Length: 110
Image (cartoon, rainbow, N blue to C red):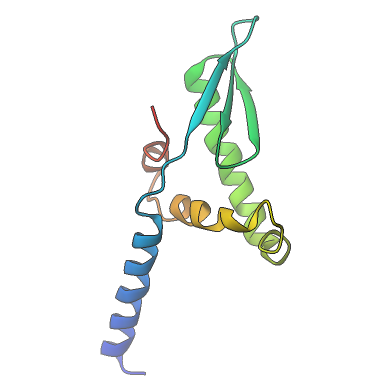
């Protein structure tokens, strides 16, 4: 394949990835606990974390999602066939395409 054709293919691939991730928004729910800590969940995944405050809970949630993304990739054959997890790939791609943690944070609603 020529270098020019490879560049076109790479650009097309990147454009497809951007479009797949374009409208991704994660919906976070925060719950104040009796001890003052905050429990955070995200609608799109079955993940729950508890932090000392809202900032801590959000950061823990992102770290948990990033860990899940790593596990999903490593066990793709299993996760991609699971009815409750196969659609997670588009969300995980959106996370993987972010250049830094702040960009990942921006995917989460306020």
